[in-house]
Length: 322
Ligand code: 8YV
Image (cartoon, rainbow, N blue to C red; front, side):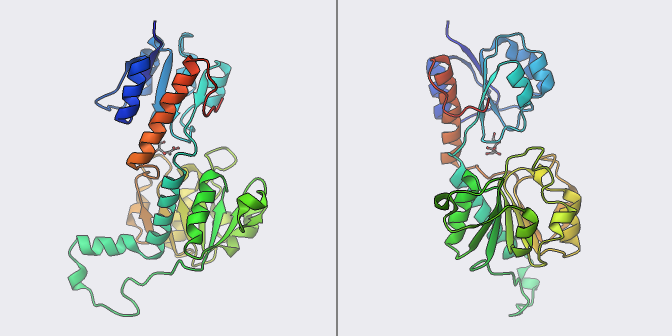
């Protein structure tokens, strides 16, 4: 009997085909989200599951398992939607999809840096609402933003994605500084300057970009006290997880022009983000699309399928979380 695999959401076609060749596979072709209360019952028939960051897989999911499920392969590098401690205690393997999305997320980081500093949200809305013609084209005022070239980018979390974002930013002549749990080797630093204390780095940032996973340690890493250390012209960028930012603090800083702007792809309580963000001209917002390219989503889907394949064929997993 072939192992039974449940795929919670639509993944890339090629990956679905590959999975179906090897396993007794149940796909979610309509891509309807499965509420956790239903997933808990459905999963009892399956040996493995492919999940996405949009699924909630909490403590009660693991507490209700009947011993059949052995592995959850998440399509995504982040796994804060999964109650990892409980997976571990039930000896359920969890895998993720690191590396294959580094470039796509770094591209989004650069996009947000440019969009937020050059006021692209406001400019775009002006044209789309046909209001451009009502504007006085003033050489020193009309849609004037801040240059990116030559500025200093502070990276919070110089991991795989942070380092690629730094590499792309260097193409704009940006100077890279970073805060990380540990100092990197000279090779990995590639000329970036290390700060062991975030409080020392923030006053030096023209731009600050978050690239940490969502953990208890990184929750609200940007809060009232840390944001107050940023210069008034600073731009905050987030492509990691919403939980790294205290919304009250960032919104206060944006509303009261304590910083210049923000570019955000991720939010607390997605997709029901704090509505105050929507009224801020100086906040450029995206709906969590950091890894959303055809190439990247295919690579992520394939990696999840390969993790399932390796697991059931006794091969080493490609990317094991626990
Ligand atoms: C995905 C992500 O949008 O990989 C991650 O951690 O945040 C994104 O790439 C999402 O989680 C897909 O499952």
